[in-house]
Amino acid sequence: NNLDVAGLLIDTLTKWNYSIIGEEAQNQLLIVQCFESTTLKNLKNQTDLRLIQLIDLPDRIQEDTLEDFELMLTPTGLDEIKQYAEGIGPHKYLLYDFIPHVLERYNLSNSFKGASLVQQAHSRRLLVHPWTFTNQYEDPVLVQYFDGGIAAEYEYILNMGVDGFFTEFAGIALCTRKQYLNKRVDQNWIYIIVA
Image: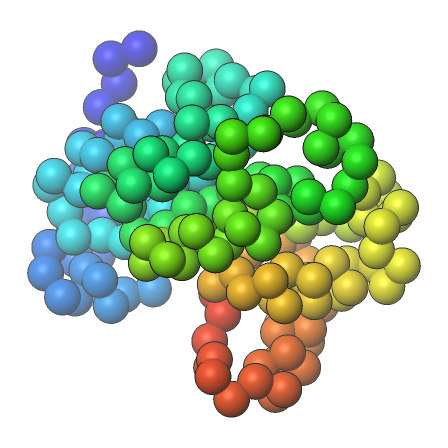
């Protein structure tokens, strides 16, 4: 696949009057998130856009990339990501190191997971934006482990210290974020990205 995704994105953003270079590119309400590290590296070389490396579960390989997601969860992987991105977007299950079937299925013995993933990313000054938070009928983990529904799941990850998250339920996310921020004096923002 020789599609120049970075070039197409730059052309589209330029057409719609988004800034791609300079401080203005960093301060606009635009964050580019991608599974493919090559695309993010190309964007880093050509723009000043805010970039997030998406990380899927280690047993999933995207059809359009052969990324080693487990490697991305190691010290070496996070150090590499820091060279071209402002943060990581891990699959939300990678933050749930208390769930037995997640631990068994994704044997991540040499990888960061749960709170340590957030801490290690933050120690490298990387943002953390897990994805995607959906309703209880589509997510068996939500039903089994979060009695308070999706609001309880949001509260769990907010207490873990994430900087933002993808959700399909912006209304509940905004209410939960507001309650969380009202209790905090050291943090006054958290991104909510609507899927």
